[in-house]
Length: 124
Length: 124
DNA sequence: ATTAGTGTCATAGTGTATTATGACACTAAA
DNA sequence: TTTAGTGTCATAATACACTATGACACTAAT
Image (cartoon, rainbow over all chains, first blue to last red; front, side, top):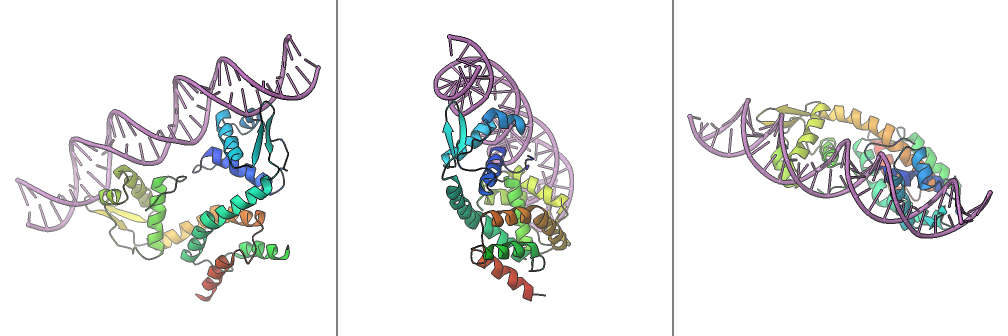
């Protein structure tokens, strides 16, 4: 895992974990790496991982069994779909649209983007 | 101007100024607010504005006349189009595409996005 | 020459993310 | 009961963005 300069590490850990859940690599009920283990893996301090896990617990996507570890909450996937979709439309999409306007990007420039969107139309 | 929590202020000032240039609100040759003036306007420290201006000067989009002030460089617009397009395709677009896949967003969800893209096709 | 406005530099202080480390409570298994 | 693994809390140290402030050099206009 490589971190971006311009975003807090504990938020990037959260983003990475959220992605694992939404893509199905982590399933509800799964035990996730312990605070110490993940910290060692990604070469980050224990406290930083703790902060990520605490945040995700507060968001309702992780559950915590003291002395045992953290687990993906049963309703994590649907909760996350809600959170992430809301975030996407409120925070992510508007500046993207603005940027596309300003840079005058057309269908040809954004071919790969359009392909993905249309491939999602079929799956209904 | 309201700042986001999760991005450095001096970078947000730069983004804001870049947008003004690309949308034509600031023209090549225009004098921009002095370091002190802008700092007072947006209630930020002089040094923070200085850091933004120094960054933009280094990027070749601002020019500096000592004792007079900062000016939009003549080639600012084309320089910026290059920088911003490269940044967009390398850094911005890939995670967006991934997010659209993960959240299964279709043409209906992204109607406004598609509208903007297609409106850019005409202008050629 | 003086004045006001510009950028520039240096210093010190504040807040916060991150690190480093130790200690403690809880749980499961030997 | 002991041991190893878990989360949790507290403390101190480091790094960096940002603030606050003063001083200085340059430029244009009076």
